[in-house]
Length: 139
Ligand code: IDP
Ligand code: MG
Image (tube, rainbow, N blue to C red; front, side):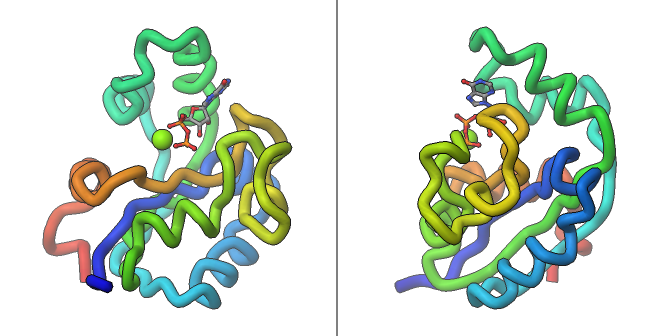
């Protein structure tokens, strides 16, 4: 299986609750190498652009408000089968449906404030990594 990269954000709810260390520990223990990482805050324009695919959804305004309310940790991760394995590690979008031991099961509070983002494809991982990091910031 090929080594590839995915993109993640520890979302404002996870940062507010002090879960950065615990979530990064779980990510590292699951075999992901951190290729890039920073604490940053998205502007409204950033969040509207990042989540443009959801712009027609009824929750879009709430999603933008939530994702901009405080700092996030943005990171690029590398591993064999990174995109799919990271989606497995974070669990279902709604923490009520997420499997035991997944990050969302352990740290998310609701379907909207669900602690962590994970890219859904190799192409989107590359687009999302480039949204937050220059090539020189990815190791
Ligand atoms: P994903 O993060 O598991 O890939 P998406 O469907 O891509 O889920 O949705 C992006 C984000 O939008 C979710 O992580 C969550 O924060 C929010 N979201 C998704 N569906 C709902 C919903 O039905 N109500 C409120 N917020 C939602
Ligand atoms: Mg998604």
